[in-house]
Image (cartoon, rainbow, N blue to C red; front, side, top):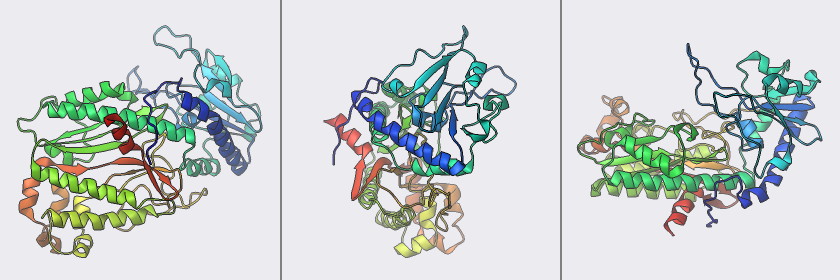
Length: 454
């Protein structure tokens, strides 16, 4: 199923405007349930405060509280509050400081403003005066670094309320899904620009710059630090060093990079060969493996089981490409597949790249552990309709992990000559963001690439 893909990333987007009202109704319903669980009447959601650097007068890049962003697309509004009181219209206490050192937030505008009673204040103390007086029946959600910003509210992030909100955030509203389609389109635009720079022989740093320009993001605006890895750097799972000079011989390119629209993220990975047909064939096999995994996804599937099944598919790729020998069962039991594919299959994604709630069986936070031997899987719950998840299998030559198999029965199962051949290419990862549907998926990533190619 192909959905229309827009490139209107603005706060004037008519589709987002049409969907936002129902989204707010859902957010209110979720906060009513959270208030019920906490025995409270008022929810105060703090946007967050800038983190100061140690022994300095500068601050780290501001990242808004995701619970605040779930209400409104305000990712750059520190020291502000959303107040929801039972049965009342939400209030936004919007800090617009008097400051000639920095650019201050402008006047509130966009499709979201009519859904709030907006009170503009010019000092944080004025914001405190507008919070609920009934502190005993008020809960506050957000990170409080400076105690004064709680303004006497003692119940900060009560687990009863937070569990309700974290669990429910696993499924996305129609508005959130549209934001994520837009983020996928924006990310795909960046990936196309990055691949073109790679084909032109650019360095990792210059590829990164090409990506940022294409998605119109500064580094702090990216949902996570881009992984731009040439050659053997592709075997470092979170490689972010960005060499300024291109290597003398370019073999491969692994890019794991996303974008965001109104606070919602995309997370996309592709791997390319610079011309080696043998490596290109392994990329094609991994792309088919990833598509096979996606074809098994629908509501009700246990994601942990799908992760384990992916190791069976990975074993077949290792055998077909002569990276290993033996049987599928031997490669899994001896942990050969875990050495080549050491990370989880994927995770929930939304306002946060690794969105909350991936281990929750229910809204009381009953924990579901990852399967034995797979500690890095971030999603263990059963899939539900309108979840958005990543699907990102990979294989890599990671010497530290392969060396751990030397001297064991697994050593004889590995074709070390093929491993030596592949080492300069680093590794392969293919990652899509997909929406879970009742009987299948909407592949946000591949739809975006297809729309750009049309």
